[in-house]
Image 1 (tube, helix red, strand yellow):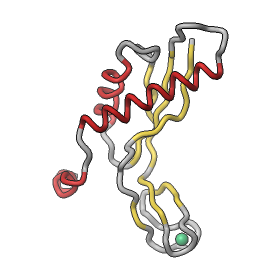
Image 2 (image 1 turned 30 degrees about the vertical axis):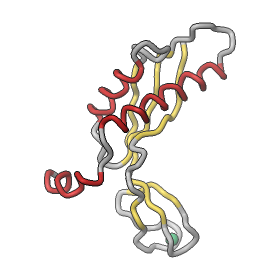
Image 3 (image 1 turned 180 degrees about the horizontal axis):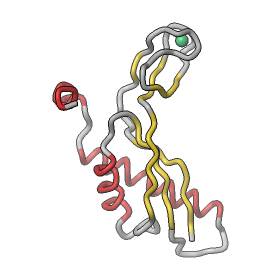
Image 4 (image 1 turned 120 degrees about the vertical axis):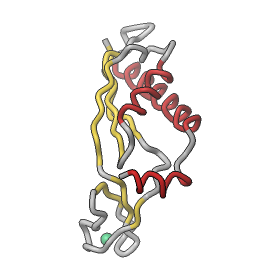
Length: 129
Ligand SMILES: [Zn+2]
């Protein structure tokens, strides 16, 4: 585990980049909750569900969320984290994208290419109230 982290450190994005992405995600969560709930002004989110890809650190994601949500409608929301495998894309069959832990294409069975972790987390859903 430590060896993996060291060997891939150079290709990882910076913390500042990740914070920017988390800010975008928080904005997206608020926008989605607002769309589902037009009755409230000054909407507060109670829950935000995130998907975390690959080996992303959960504690780090929570820290980023706390920072990014400060002063927004998502501040204080409960963060629910789901884990997903790494994302892969298979160039052998039809460019199929899939999530997996072993990287074997479910369509043709070839070893697929791992998609770089340019986006380490994604919004699953936001709950207001
Ligand atoms: Zn394939």
